[in-house]
Image 1: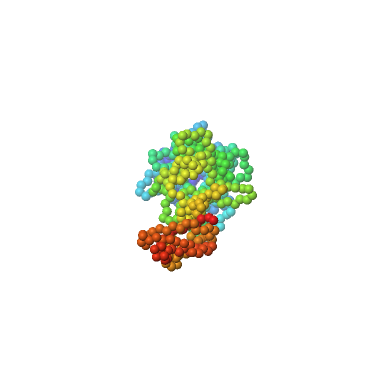
Image 2: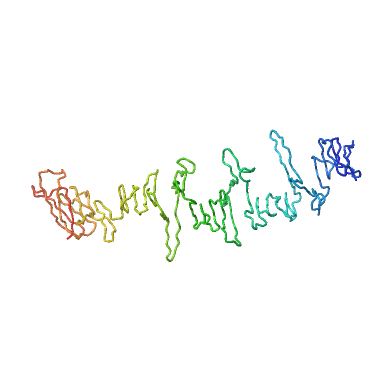
Length: 491
Protein backbone atom coordinates (compact mmCIF):
# COMPACT_ATOMS: atom_id res chain seq x y z
CA UNK A 1 0.00 0.00 0.00
CA UNK A 2 1.31 3.41 -0.96
CA UNK A 3 0.32 6.96 0.03
CA UNK A 4 1.64 10.06 -1.72
CA UNK A 5 2.36 13.33 0.20
CA UNK A 6 3.40 16.52 -1.46
CA UNK A 7 6.68 17.94 -0.23
CA UNK A 8 9.26 20.52 -1.17
CA UNK A 9 12.38 19.15 0.54
CA UNK A 10 14.96 16.39 0.29
CA UNK A 11 15.58 13.93 3.10
CA UNK A 12 15.21 10.40 4.43
CA UNK A 13 12.36 9.35 6.81
CA UNK A 14 12.75 6.17 8.88
CA UNK A 15 9.66 5.06 10.88
CA UNK A 16 8.29 1.87 12.36
CA UNK A 17 7.00 -0.37 9.60
CA UNK A 18 7.39 2.35 6.93
CA UNK A 19 10.05 3.11 4.36
CA UNK A 20 10.04 6.53 2.72
CA UNK A 21 11.96 7.57 -0.40
CA UNK A 22 12.04 10.91 -2.17
CA UNK A 23 10.73 10.96 -5.77
CA UNK A 24 11.74 13.78 -8.15
CA UNK A 25 8.11 14.29 -9.14
CA UNK A 26 7.85 16.19 -5.84
CA UNK A 27 6.09 13.32 -4.12
CA UNK A 28 7.08 11.44 -0.99
CA UNK A 29 5.96 7.82 -1.31
CA UNK A 30 5.45 5.89 1.91
CA UNK A 31 5.65 2.13 1.25
CA UNK A 32 4.31 -0.12 3.96
CA UNK A 33 5.50 -3.27 2.16
CA UNK A 34 9.07 -2.92 3.40
CA UNK A 35 9.17 -2.59 7.18
CA UNK A 36 12.07 -0.66 8.56
CA UNK A 37 13.42 -0.41 12.08
CA UNK A 38 12.44 2.49 14.30
CA UNK A 39 14.32 5.65 13.39
CA UNK A 40 14.19 9.41 13.34
CA UNK A 41 14.48 12.13 10.77
CA UNK A 42 18.00 11.97 9.53
CA UNK A 43 17.66 15.50 8.45
CA UNK A 44 14.91 18.03 9.19
CA UNK A 45 12.80 18.45 6.09
CA UNK A 46 12.84 22.18 5.55
CA UNK A 47 9.51 23.80 4.60
CA UNK A 48 7.72 20.44 4.68
CA UNK A 49 3.96 20.61 4.06
CA UNK A 50 1.90 17.51 4.73
CA UNK A 51 -1.62 17.06 3.43
CA UNK A 52 -3.99 14.34 4.67
CA UNK A 53 -7.13 14.20 2.54
CA UNK A 54 -5.78 16.98 0.31
CA UNK A 55 -3.03 17.24 -2.28
CA UNK A 56 -2.57 20.96 -1.79
CA UNK A 57 -1.80 21.54 1.90
CA UNK A 58 -1.60 25.22 2.83
CA UNK A 59 0.07 24.66 6.20
CA UNK A 60 2.70 22.37 7.68
CA UNK A 61 -0.04 19.82 8.42
CA UNK A 62 -3.49 20.03 6.84
CA UNK A 63 -6.13 17.38 7.48
CA UNK A 64 -9.24 17.61 5.32
CA UNK A 65 -12.26 15.32 5.14
CA UNK A 66 -12.73 14.67 1.44
CA UNK A 67 -16.46 13.98 1.65
CA UNK A 68 -19.32 14.82 3.98
CA UNK A 69 -18.77 13.26 7.39
CA UNK A 70 -22.32 12.06 7.82
CA UNK A 71 -22.68 9.54 10.64
CA UNK A 72 -18.94 9.68 11.35
CA UNK A 73 -18.47 10.45 15.03
CA UNK A 74 -14.93 11.79 14.70
CA UNK A 75 -13.98 12.70 11.08
CA UNK A 76 -10.49 13.63 12.32
CA UNK A 77 -9.12 11.77 15.36
CA UNK A 78 -5.85 11.34 17.25
CA UNK A 79 -6.24 8.01 19.00
CA UNK A 80 -4.18 5.38 20.70
CA UNK A 81 -5.55 1.88 21.16
CA UNK A 82 -5.21 -0.53 24.01
CA UNK A 83 -1.82 -1.70 22.84
CA UNK A 84 -0.46 1.81 22.38
CA UNK A 85 -1.74 3.50 25.48
CA UNK A 86 0.42 5.88 27.52
CA UNK A 87 2.41 3.80 29.96
CA UNK A 88 5.17 4.96 32.25
CA UNK A 89 6.61 4.27 35.67
CA UNK A 90 7.31 7.93 36.43
CA UNK A 91 7.28 11.41 34.92
CA UNK A 92 4.30 13.00 33.19
CA UNK A 93 3.28 11.98 29.67
CA UNK A 94 1.59 14.33 27.22
CA UNK A 95 -0.48 12.75 24.48
CA UNK A 96 -0.85 15.97 22.44
CA UNK A 97 1.50 18.84 23.17
CA UNK A 98 1.21 22.39 21.83
CA UNK A 99 4.30 24.35 22.79
CA UNK A 100 5.30 26.83 20.10
CA UNK A 101 8.49 28.80 20.63
CA UNK A 102 7.59 32.47 20.15
CA UNK A 103 10.07 34.96 18.78
CA UNK A 104 8.18 37.92 17.37
CA UNK A 105 8.81 41.59 16.76
CA UNK A 106 6.88 44.64 15.74
CA UNK A 107 3.09 44.33 15.87
CA UNK A 108 3.09 40.53 15.59
CA UNK A 109 0.85 38.42 17.81
CA UNK A 110 0.01 34.77 18.17
CA UNK A 111 -2.60 32.21 19.22
CA UNK A 112 -1.31 28.93 20.65
CA UNK A 113 -4.50 27.03 19.75
CA UNK A 114 -7.13 28.28 17.31
CA UNK A 115 -10.49 26.53 17.05
CA UNK A 116 -12.71 28.19 14.45
CA UNK A 117 -15.88 26.32 13.53
CA UNK A 118 -17.76 27.70 10.54
CA UNK A 119 -21.45 26.80 10.38
CA UNK A 120 -22.39 26.88 6.69
CA UNK A 121 -25.83 25.41 7.24
CA UNK A 122 -27.99 27.76 9.26
CA UNK A 123 -30.34 24.86 9.88
CA UNK A 124 -28.04 23.11 12.33
CA UNK A 125 -29.06 20.06 14.28
CA UNK A 126 -30.53 20.02 17.76
CA UNK A 127 -27.48 18.41 19.35
CA UNK A 128 -24.81 20.24 21.32
CA UNK A 129 -22.43 22.52 19.45
CA UNK A 130 -19.08 22.71 21.17
CA UNK A 131 -15.79 24.23 20.14
CA UNK A 132 -13.98 22.26 22.87
CA UNK A 133 -15.09 19.29 24.95
CA UNK A 134 -12.54 17.91 27.43
CA UNK A 135 -13.54 14.51 28.77
CA UNK A 136 -12.31 11.75 31.03
CA UNK A 137 -13.88 8.32 30.64
CA UNK A 138 -16.53 9.78 28.33
CA UNK A 139 -17.65 12.38 30.88
CA UNK A 140 -17.36 16.03 29.90
CA UNK A 141 -15.28 18.08 32.31
CA UNK A 142 -14.86 21.34 30.38
CA UNK A 143 -16.97 22.57 27.47
CA UNK A 144 -16.75 25.64 25.26
CA UNK A 145 -19.95 26.02 23.25
CA UNK A 146 -20.11 27.63 19.83
CA UNK A 147 -22.11 30.45 21.43
CA UNK A 148 -19.09 31.23 23.62
CA UNK A 149 -20.49 29.89 26.90
CA UNK A 150 -18.00 27.93 28.99
CA UNK A 151 -19.15 25.08 31.17
CA UNK A 152 -17.10 23.43 33.89
CA UNK A 153 -18.89 20.42 35.32
CA UNK A 154 -21.82 20.97 32.94
CA UNK A 155 -22.32 20.46 29.21
CA UNK A 156 -25.12 23.03 29.02
CA UNK A 157 -23.68 26.27 30.39
CA UNK A 158 -26.37 28.92 30.82
CA UNK A 159 -23.96 31.85 31.05
CA UNK A 160 -20.57 32.94 29.79
CA UNK A 161 -18.99 30.94 32.63
CA UNK A 162 -21.04 28.25 34.33
CA UNK A 163 -19.41 26.19 37.09
CA UNK A 164 -21.34 23.21 38.42
CA UNK A 165 -19.85 20.45 40.53
CA UNK A 166 -21.07 17.00 39.52
CA UNK A 167 -21.00 15.75 43.11
CA UNK A 168 -19.87 17.67 46.18
CA UNK A 169 -20.18 14.87 48.71
CA UNK A 170 -17.64 15.48 51.49
CA UNK A 171 -15.92 18.07 49.31
CA UNK A 172 -14.97 21.18 51.30
CA UNK A 173 -14.81 23.45 48.24
CA UNK A 174 -16.55 22.00 45.15
CA UNK A 175 -15.55 25.15 43.24
CA UNK A 176 -12.30 26.91 44.19
CA UNK A 177 -10.05 29.66 42.88
CA UNK A 178 -6.71 28.95 44.52
CA UNK A 179 -3.07 29.88 44.34
CA UNK A 180 -0.40 27.61 45.77
CA UNK A 181 0.74 27.75 49.37
CA UNK A 182 2.99 30.52 50.61
CA UNK A 183 6.28 30.61 48.80
CA UNK A 184 5.17 28.32 45.98
CA UNK A 185 4.82 29.24 42.34
CA UNK A 186 1.48 30.85 41.54
CA UNK A 187 1.09 32.98 44.65
CA UNK A 188 0.50 36.73 44.40
CA UNK A 189 3.89 38.39 44.67
CA UNK A 190 4.79 42.00 44.03
CA UNK A 191 7.20 44.71 45.16
CA UNK A 192 4.63 47.50 44.96
CA UNK A 193 1.10 48.24 43.85
CA UNK A 194 -2.11 46.40 44.68
CA UNK A 195 -2.89 42.98 43.24
CA UNK A 196 -6.40 41.67 42.71
CA UNK A 197 -6.69 37.89 42.86
CA UNK A 198 -10.30 38.00 41.66
CA UNK A 199 -11.56 41.20 40.07
CA UNK A 200 -15.20 41.98 39.24
CA UNK A 201 -15.36 45.20 37.25
CA UNK A 202 -18.15 45.16 34.66
CA UNK A 203 -18.54 48.17 32.38
CA UNK A 204 -22.17 49.26 32.58
CA UNK A 205 -23.92 50.96 29.66
CA UNK A 206 -27.65 50.60 30.17
CA UNK A 207 -30.76 52.48 29.15
CA UNK A 208 -34.46 52.61 29.95
CA UNK A 209 -35.50 50.40 32.91
CA UNK A 210 -32.40 48.18 32.90
CA UNK A 211 -30.56 47.41 36.11
CA UNK A 212 -27.62 45.28 37.16
CA UNK A 213 -25.97 43.36 39.99
CA UNK A 214 -22.18 43.20 40.00
CA UNK A 215 -22.10 39.98 42.06
CA UNK A 216 -25.10 37.69 42.54
CA UNK A 217 -25.01 34.89 45.10
CA UNK A 218 -28.26 32.88 45.06
CA UNK A 219 -28.27 29.72 47.14
CA UNK A 220 -31.26 27.39 46.82
CA UNK A 221 -31.75 25.18 49.86
CA UNK A 222 -33.52 21.89 49.25
CA UNK A 223 -32.19 20.37 52.47
CA UNK A 224 -29.59 21.61 54.93
CA UNK A 225 -27.61 20.13 57.78
CA UNK A 226 -27.00 21.50 61.24
CA UNK A 227 -23.82 23.33 60.26
CA UNK A 228 -23.57 27.03 59.39
CA UNK A 229 -25.20 28.21 56.16
CA UNK A 230 -23.40 31.20 54.69
CA UNK A 231 -23.80 32.99 51.38
CA UNK A 232 -20.43 34.72 51.83
CA UNK A 233 -17.49 34.03 54.14
CA UNK A 234 -14.42 36.27 53.87
CA UNK A 235 -11.38 34.83 55.62
CA UNK A 236 -7.71 35.51 56.21
CA UNK A 237 -5.55 32.63 57.35
CA UNK A 238 -8.63 30.46 57.85
CA UNK A 239 -10.27 32.95 60.24
CA UNK A 240 -13.63 34.42 59.23
CA UNK A 241 -13.67 38.20 59.04
CA UNK A 242 -17.11 38.80 57.56
CA UNK A 243 -20.00 36.38 57.09
CA UNK A 244 -23.32 36.74 55.30
CA UNK A 245 -25.65 34.00 56.45
CA UNK A 246 -28.40 32.50 54.32
CA UNK A 247 -30.87 34.21 56.67
CA UNK A 248 -29.45 37.60 55.61
CA UNK A 249 -27.66 38.29 58.89
CA UNK A 250 -24.23 39.85 58.48
CA UNK A 251 -21.49 39.11 60.98
CA UNK A 252 -18.26 41.08 61.25
CA UNK A 253 -15.89 39.48 63.72
CA UNK A 254 -18.40 36.70 64.39
CA UNK A 255 -19.60 33.69 62.38
CA UNK A 256 -22.92 33.48 64.21
CA UNK A 257 -24.59 36.91 63.87
CA UNK A 258 -27.83 37.23 65.85
CA UNK A 259 -29.09 40.35 64.06
CA UNK A 260 -29.08 41.85 60.58
CA UNK A 261 -25.69 43.43 61.33
CA UNK A 262 -23.66 41.99 64.20
CA UNK A 263 -20.22 43.48 64.87
CA UNK A 264 -18.09 41.78 67.48
CA UNK A 265 -14.51 42.40 68.47
CA UNK A 266 -12.90 38.98 68.18
CA UNK A 267 -10.34 39.62 70.92
CA UNK A 268 -9.67 42.15 73.66
CA UNK A 269 -9.19 45.60 72.14
CA UNK A 270 -6.26 46.59 74.34
CA UNK A 271 -4.69 49.87 73.15
CA UNK A 272 -7.23 50.05 70.30
CA UNK A 273 -8.88 53.48 70.28
CA UNK A 274 -11.82 52.46 68.09
CA UNK A 275 -12.43 48.68 67.94
CA UNK A 276 -15.47 49.36 65.74
CA UNK A 277 -15.40 52.46 63.53
CA UNK A 278 -17.32 54.01 60.65
CA UNK A 279 -14.80 56.33 59.04
CA UNK A 280 -14.29 58.41 55.95
CA UNK A 281 -10.94 59.85 54.99
CA UNK A 282 -9.73 63.29 56.02
CA UNK A 283 -11.17 66.44 54.49
CA UNK A 284 -10.51 66.60 50.77
CA UNK A 285 -9.48 62.95 50.47
CA UNK A 286 -11.36 60.29 48.59
CA UNK A 287 -14.36 59.06 50.57
CA UNK A 288 -15.18 62.39 52.24
CA UNK A 289 -18.72 63.70 52.10
CA UNK A 290 -18.69 66.25 49.28
CA UNK A 291 -21.67 67.94 47.65
CA UNK A 292 -22.71 71.23 46.08
CA UNK A 293 -26.24 71.11 47.40
CA UNK A 294 -28.64 69.05 49.51
CA UNK A 295 -27.87 67.45 52.88
CA UNK A 296 -25.77 64.31 53.25
CA UNK A 297 -26.21 61.79 56.04
CA UNK A 298 -23.07 59.84 56.93
CA UNK A 299 -24.97 57.46 59.21
CA UNK A 300 -28.76 57.33 58.98
CA UNK A 301 -31.05 55.50 61.41
CA UNK A 302 -34.57 55.63 59.99
CA UNK A 303 -36.55 52.44 60.70
CA UNK A 304 -40.09 52.19 59.39
CA UNK A 305 -42.27 51.04 62.30
CA UNK A 306 -45.45 49.01 61.82
CA UNK A 307 -46.30 47.38 65.13
CA UNK A 308 -49.40 46.20 66.92
CA UNK A 309 -50.40 44.77 70.27
CA UNK A 310 -47.91 45.34 73.08
CA UNK A 311 -44.93 45.78 70.76
CA UNK A 312 -42.50 48.63 71.26
CA UNK A 313 -39.25 49.79 69.71
CA UNK A 314 -36.03 51.69 70.23
CA UNK A 315 -34.57 53.63 67.30
CA UNK A 316 -31.02 53.49 68.65
CA UNK A 317 -29.90 51.33 71.58
CA UNK A 318 -26.56 51.87 73.31
CA UNK A 319 -26.05 49.38 76.13
CA UNK A 320 -22.62 49.33 77.72
CA UNK A 321 -21.84 46.52 80.17
CA UNK A 322 -19.02 47.34 82.58
CA UNK A 323 -17.07 44.37 83.94
CA UNK A 324 -14.12 46.54 84.91
CA UNK A 325 -13.35 50.19 84.15
CA UNK A 326 -10.39 52.48 84.38
CA UNK A 327 -10.13 56.01 85.71
CA UNK A 328 -10.83 57.76 82.38
CA UNK A 329 -14.14 59.26 81.27
CA UNK A 330 -17.00 56.86 80.59
CA UNK A 331 -19.54 58.00 78.06
CA UNK A 332 -22.45 56.26 76.35
CA UNK A 333 -22.59 58.97 73.70
CA UNK A 334 -20.15 61.69 72.70
CA UNK A 335 -21.07 63.99 69.80
CA UNK A 336 -18.07 65.93 68.56
CA UNK A 337 -17.03 68.36 65.84
CA UNK A 338 -13.33 68.77 65.20
CA UNK A 339 -12.51 66.67 68.26
CA UNK A 340 -14.51 68.93 70.61
CA UNK A 341 -17.42 67.41 72.54
CA UNK A 342 -20.71 69.17 71.86
CA UNK A 343 -23.07 66.85 73.71
CA UNK A 344 -22.20 63.94 75.94
CA UNK A 345 -24.17 61.28 77.79
CA UNK A 346 -22.19 60.04 80.77
CA UNK A 347 -22.47 56.41 81.88
CA UNK A 348 -24.14 57.73 85.07
CA UNK A 349 -26.93 59.18 82.95
CA UNK A 350 -25.80 62.80 83.27
CA UNK A 351 -26.11 64.81 80.07
CA UNK A 352 -23.72 67.60 79.26
CA UNK A 353 -24.18 70.23 76.55
CA UNK A 354 -21.12 72.37 76.11
CA UNK A 355 -19.30 70.37 78.79
CA UNK A 356 -17.73 66.91 78.80
CA UNK A 357 -18.04 66.50 82.58
CA UNK A 358 -21.68 67.08 83.55
CA UNK A 359 -22.26 67.05 87.32
CA UNK A 360 -26.07 67.05 87.14
CA UNK A 361 -28.71 65.20 85.13
CA UNK A 362 -28.56 68.11 82.67
CA UNK A 363 -25.74 70.64 82.64
CA UNK A 364 -25.61 73.33 79.98
CA UNK A 365 -22.70 75.68 79.55
CA UNK A 366 -24.00 78.50 77.38
CA UNK A 367 -27.34 80.15 76.73
CA UNK A 368 -30.61 78.18 76.85
CA UNK A 369 -33.75 78.81 74.82
CA UNK A 370 -37.06 77.26 75.87
CA UNK A 371 -39.96 78.12 73.60
CA UNK A 372 -43.19 76.25 74.38
CA UNK A 373 -45.71 78.95 73.52
CA UNK A 374 -45.84 80.43 77.03
CA UNK A 375 -42.61 82.37 76.65
CA UNK A 376 -42.64 86.16 76.90
CA UNK A 377 -40.49 89.09 77.90
CA UNK A 378 -39.52 89.17 81.59
CA UNK A 379 -41.41 85.98 82.41
CA UNK A 380 -40.09 83.43 84.87
CA UNK A 381 -39.77 79.67 84.21
CA UNK A 382 -42.06 78.14 86.84
CA UNK A 383 -42.91 74.48 87.50
CA UNK A 384 -46.22 73.03 88.55
CA UNK A 385 -46.77 70.34 91.19
CA UNK A 386 -45.75 67.59 88.70
CA UNK A 387 -42.50 69.37 87.86
CA UNK A 388 -43.61 70.51 84.41
CA UNK A 389 -42.26 74.01 83.79
CA UNK A 390 -43.72 76.87 81.78
CA UNK A 391 -43.09 80.58 81.46
CA UNK A 392 -45.10 82.61 83.99
CA UNK A 393 -45.13 86.21 85.25
CA UNK A 394 -43.22 86.83 88.49
CA UNK A 395 -45.05 85.61 91.61
CA UNK A 396 -47.99 87.86 92.64
CA UNK A 397 -47.96 89.82 89.38
CA UNK A 398 -50.53 89.08 86.69
CA UNK A 399 -49.75 91.73 84.09
CA UNK A 400 -47.43 94.66 83.88
CA UNK A 401 -46.42 97.27 81.35
CA UNK A 402 -44.13 100.21 80.66
CA UNK A 403 -45.86 102.88 78.56
CA UNK A 404 -44.08 105.83 76.95
CA UNK A 405 -45.62 109.33 77.08
CA UNK A 406 -46.80 108.97 73.45
CA UNK A 407 -48.67 105.72 74.24
CA UNK A 408 -46.05 103.25 72.94
CA UNK A 409 -45.82 100.01 74.92
CA UNK A 410 -42.10 99.70 75.67
CA UNK A 411 -42.18 96.40 77.63
CA UNK A 412 -44.51 94.16 79.58
CA UNK A 413 -46.52 90.95 79.42
CA UNK A 414 -50.21 90.18 79.36
CA UNK A 415 -50.75 93.48 77.52
CA UNK A 416 -52.29 93.48 74.06
CA UNK A 417 -51.84 97.21 73.30
CA UNK A 418 -51.54 100.73 74.73
CA UNK A 419 -52.93 103.88 73.11
CA UNK A 420 -52.64 107.66 73.79
CA UNK A 421 -56.26 108.74 73.30
CA UNK A 422 -55.51 112.41 73.86
CA UNK A 423 -53.22 114.60 75.88
CA UNK A 424 -52.73 113.00 79.30
CA UNK A 425 -55.31 110.25 78.55
CA UNK A 426 -54.28 106.59 77.82
CA UNK A 427 -56.14 103.31 77.22
CA UNK A 428 -54.51 99.90 78.08
CA UNK A 429 -55.93 96.66 76.59
CA UNK A 430 -55.08 93.24 78.05
CA UNK A 431 -54.71 89.83 76.41
CA UNK A 432 -56.99 88.09 78.91
CA UNK A 433 -59.94 89.44 80.92
CA UNK A 434 -58.89 91.14 84.11
CA UNK A 435 -59.56 89.26 87.35
CA UNK A 436 -57.36 91.61 89.30
CA UNK A 437 -57.11 95.28 90.07
CA UNK A 438 -54.45 97.86 89.35
CA UNK A 439 -52.18 97.86 92.37
CA UNK A 440 -49.39 100.31 91.60
CA UNK A 441 -48.76 103.30 89.37
CA UNK A 442 -45.30 104.74 89.07
CA UNK A 443 -44.64 108.01 87.27
CA UNK A 444 -41.12 108.66 86.00
CA UNK A 445 -39.41 111.49 84.19
CA UNK A 446 -38.31 110.75 80.59
CA UNK A 447 -36.93 114.26 79.95
CA UNK A 448 -39.94 115.13 77.83
CA UNK A 449 -41.27 117.51 80.42
CA UNK A 450 -39.67 119.75 82.97
CA UNK A 451 -38.15 118.02 85.98
CA UNK A 452 -39.66 120.53 88.39
CA UNK A 453 -43.23 119.52 87.62
CA UNK A 454 -45.06 117.00 89.77
CA UNK A 455 -47.39 114.52 88.07
CA UNK A 456 -50.05 112.27 89.44
CA UNK A 457 -52.25 109.59 87.78
CA UNK A 458 -55.56 107.92 88.39
CA UNK A 459 -57.52 105.04 86.87
CA UNK A 460 -60.60 106.51 85.31
CA UNK A 461 -62.58 103.48 84.11
CA UNK A 462 -62.08 99.67 83.95
CA UNK A 463 -63.67 97.01 81.74
CA UNK A 464 -63.03 93.22 81.75
CA UNK A 465 -60.26 93.64 79.16
CA UNK A 466 -59.01 97.25 79.50
CA UNK A 467 -58.67 100.30 81.65
CA UNK A 468 -58.06 104.02 81.10
CA UNK A 469 -55.49 106.27 82.76
CA UNK A 470 -55.60 110.03 83.33
CA UNK A 471 -52.30 111.84 83.81
CA UNK A 472 -52.36 115.23 85.58
CA UNK A 473 -49.87 118.06 86.03
CA UNK A 474 -50.24 119.18 89.62
CA UNK A 475 -48.99 122.69 88.95
CA UNK A 476 -51.62 123.35 86.31
CA UNK A 477 -54.20 120.91 87.59
CA UNK A 478 -54.73 119.68 84.03
CA UNK A 479 -54.11 116.63 81.87
CA UNK A 480 -50.57 116.27 80.64
CA UNK A 481 -48.46 113.61 78.90
CA UNK A 482 -45.83 111.55 80.65
CA UNK A 483 -44.46 107.97 80.78
CA UNK A 484 -45.65 105.48 83.42
CA UNK A 485 -45.56 101.86 84.58
CA UNK A 486 -48.45 99.77 85.90
CA UNK A 487 -48.78 96.40 87.62
CA UNK A 488 -51.84 94.21 88.18
CA UNK A 489 -52.06 91.92 91.19
CA UNK A 490 -54.55 89.43 92.53
CA UNK A 491 -57.64 90.42 94.50
